[in-house]
Image (cartoon, rainbow, N blue to C red; front, side):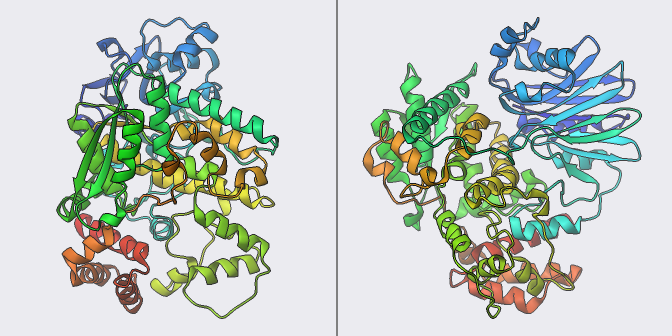
Amino acid sequence: MCGIIGCNYKIDNFHKAIDLLTHRGPDNLGFYEYKNNQFGHTRLSIIDLNEEANQPMIFDDLVITFNGEIYNYQELIKEENLTCLTKSDTEVLIRLYQKYEKEFLNKLEGMFSFCIYDKKKNSFFCARDRFGKKPFYYYYKDNKFIYASEIKSILKLLNTKPLINNNAFYEYLTFMTPINENTFYQDIKKLSAGSYIFLDEKSFKLEKYYDINNIKTTQDNEKEILENIETLLINSVKKRLVSDVEVATLLSGGIDSSLTSALYAEFSNKQINTFCIGYDEHTHYSELPYAKIVAKHINSNHHELIIGKKEFIETIDTMLDFVDEPFADSASIPTYLISQFINKQGIKVALSGEGSDESFLGYDNYFKMLQYYKTKAENSTFNLTKEWEYNKRAYFKEPIYQTCGEAFTERQKEKLLVNYKAKNYIKNYMAYEDCPTKWLTYIDFKIWIAEVLMTKIDRMSMANSLELRAPFLDHQLVEYMLSVEDKIKQGNTNKYLLKQIAQKYLPNEIVHRQKKGFSFPFLEWLHEEYKEEILNTILKVNKKTNIFNEDFVKFIYNESKENRFKQHLWNLYIFARWHDKNN
């Protein structure tokens, strides 16, 4: 796992931009220049620890900078009859490009973003993995091209700071982060998951190579389905153990991380390390007791990190420094702290449970949403509740569910913002219009997973030189679950199919416990620490920008003290804190 950066013109402070990515790869810093094209790389050594695998890697007329892991690289060497001089997965990408040019991306299993520069063609081929696990940002204007793993390195190379992108801000209010290709900076974009760029002297081409928008229902035999899911999940865990360093797991005590840890322990020939985070107050949020039960059951070497308000408050600005723009998933802070804790134990790789809820219908809200699709909707008097919004969408035959991280609705933004008119931000994602169950999974993979969860686990783990791997995000498993007949997938409880498999590996008190979801006392701590300063910070930024209706901001603030509109307030506060710090 690494940091990558490159550009197609000579920039004097290029090395300073590489240095900003050192946290992503402290084991080696590499630089290469060819005819004013510059390439940089910071390496976290996980596969092939020798210097021969350092980057930028050059073979023949090709230069590659690569961030990620290709889990099936050894199989590809055999299947494709590749001649490789190193033992690294990086060289495999070069050899596949030599053989197929752009047409090899769907052969890859793993998480990746990379750029291959062809000296003969003076061309750049850049790609990002199917579900956006690894980041890729770029700037392309006036024939100047810059790419990097993080926005901060692109900003370092630009002479002026770009203006704020208003569309990104509007998207952020609803989805916790900008979506589509947007970032908070005009002209700095992110390459969408499952997409590639091809740039040469004549053209700039942006193409999608993968999506999950047309998977047919083909699986309707429950016994076979359970057998196939178990096989796919076992294979997925095994693939993610490919490493020349030790692999640990995050173990929250929920079924996803517990099953991942249990399967890993089953295959391992030694005691595995598991890690969990808890809280020194508001302990009803803590899942430490459940994690202990699982750790004892699988005989892991279990580690607990207990944090409090002090650590939380001290990490807010640190989190913003590593995401480079407003990002409102509050769970990023404990993710940062547990990643830091794991790194201090000398561990570079860990497994995590992301992606299970979305494929296996794990959210209770999914079942609530499905009822809206079945119930005849009525046009009712406007109010600010989500229930009114869902009913309105059903009445006008709009997509009712628009990701589990949705905060401000369009009507709420009309109340919040000065001179704002409601927009349709998910029109680019339409699929499965006649299949609500598949739509739930699809839209969460497109926005919640690709834009929010993957940003969180990449930035917060890599800030601490830790690579997180998510077995439930194996594309074969995701595609298979989308092919399962709806009634079988829904069963009589959330995660119906997964729970039947988990019973083989975990105690019943873990498998059948009530779903808790990852939560922690972020708003309680915020109010305890800052009180009226929360509101004052937002209003101070509004004095400069004049974008908010102050009465509505005050309404949100007062409601949050009663445990309502919590995410709304956090979105506003994080934006204001970022803006106050960076403008």
